[in-house]
Length: 295
Image (tube, rainbow, N blue to C red; front, side, top):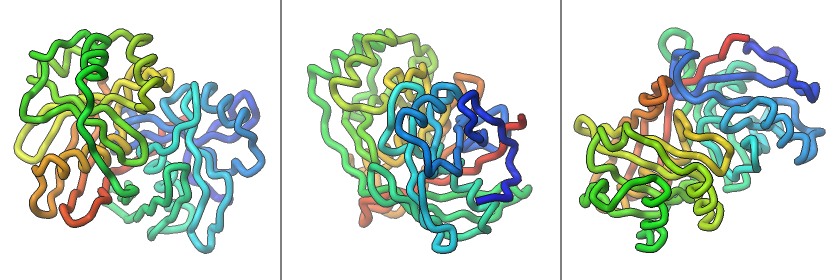
């Protein structure tokens, strides 16, 4: 594929990497993602090396596909390891492919399953992408792992909101979901990076999704990501999808509902993720915009 309009740079490995900020219209906000559109010849070690060079929480690699059919194979690497699914890097890749191929549906084969994304034109010439997740699910988290997570976070049980029990939610990856008792508790994130990372690797969690309610229909969220070598994600589409499934599982969704998740605020990279949940559909739709980060 050729003809990209995005700013790009060649990594030290000689691979062309596009840089996007996802879930924002401001390059200084959102969650940065690397996008490699011509990754067919790259081995796993090559992709991991490029992701480490880029240094973002994830870089997406288009490793094959059919541009005419708008179907692609997509893989994701953090600086430390491959990730089965990454929402913000999918959004960035979709906006870039939408620039090249035009608005419409894109289908991706990922390690987590089949993902579809609809790319549409939006105000200010900033495309909007809406991904439909794999079927989501959510289950109660055991007391022992919750206590271990709280210890690593330097939180206590009193720091949790009893209206939202701890769960492990799935939306392509597993995420521990914990509700902070207040916005102030959420803002004061200062955790043990190594201890939380070790626990997450042992449990198979990709991030810990910390949240608290905001205005009606809105939530504030933070996502520690030590297993990826990153302290925190500024916007996490996969966790947002899992969170939608969590809310449905708890019975908070009785009709098709759209929530707005604010993330990245406490990092200085504000992001907005729109999460559409239907009680009759285990899949969740997550939408947002993505813009090029200037070279």
